[in-house]
Length: 116
Image (cartoon, rainbow, N blue to C red):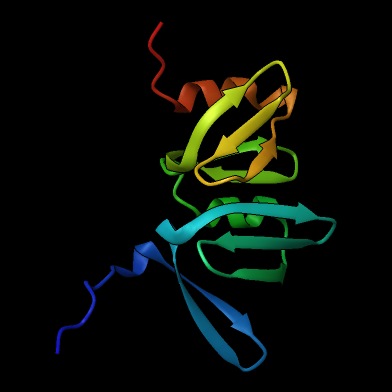
């Protein structure tokens, strides 16, 4: 019997769900969406809704892996397939499309490795 590769605690988040703490591996987080006082963390196979600000969750996510692309969205940079500046959209691996806020384009451009 083999066990999965261990993760360091820096690569994990724990989310409180009632009296239970659920473990989330940070590299499984695809994006985080904010709606008012709540955020939804989208992973490969689950969604978690929490009462928390997007700013607070951004402080917990590694800045080298995640970038804020809209006032309501943070995305894992490794999952970005295509950026459409005409439509202000970010297309992720799979079929998910997120909005790109005009004020966040510069931050996004600093994070990606662009060849001209």
